[in-house]
Length: 423
Image 1 (cartoon, rainbow, N blue to C red):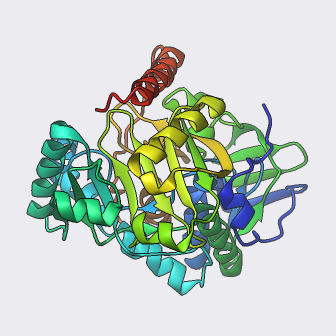
Image 2: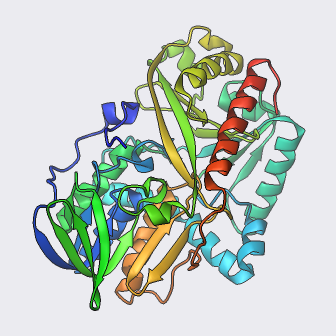
């Protein structure tokens, strides 16, 4: 399987990562980390900051996986509605996880400020955009549940939502002022710079060949080197095929594709997302849309068929914003989301000292950053437990069939939208 990076807008516009090399020596550290995404980098940064010796190996380059390919919405919370979260975990554990992730945007934007991370940080909130009666009902329910837990969210009426989005195809929007947008690869690379600054050792181009026990420790083996550590964090999420294939079976990989236009004109920018909130809709097969700081519209949807996705996206964008009658795409890329069966992130202790964190189900920026920080705090005795469930997950039966179900479902849904059938 190729380890070549994708030609995304984010890769074309992100500041450079720190200069790293492949692991070509045998090192002993307190904690070894596999995976250079948000979770792994956050854990490396915080462990090093706490004085723990830590080394991280990445199969390709920092931010190679979902961390460098995603939409870049720094949101609070999870996809699950708060009441569903309580039903799955119980009120006490559900509230603990909810509260931890409610402040995730504060922590993300705080790190960006603390370490001067260049990642187009724009904290103008996000809009969850309502489509049809079902969408409006869902947003009313979400708004009520979130407000009951103290969230400063607001349900916008049709006129206000349409003005903020710049489209008459939505009947409402749930505005969350805590959230914002970032350049996700820029953020990942910034976390890498911060981790190095704090003393973490990072290595790229170092796919893991195996992880084996050695007495009270573990040995993470790459082609030309190894890391020996008492604790190992597997932080590969949807890209677990590189060195940790067994963990990849516990999540369904869902493809998500995005396209970015050429910079819009001043007239178009006055209409399309004039306040530059990050957005996603309530449709059965979700779409996302946001602006970058150069005035490009970034539009995404589930599914991995690039040619067909571009055709659907072009028609959908023209339908949403007639002012964009001539859509010119400048970038197109695809990434993978690790969907857990319960749509919750999980930290598993696979064996003593061997941990795996994954399952962000499409919302990795805040949760990934928080989970990395919490692991560092837990390992150093600064907290008694993690906010996410500590559950040993089973392999998902018929995983490939379920992946195809999502892919075919997205394709079929896009066909319906091309024939003007909306949710």
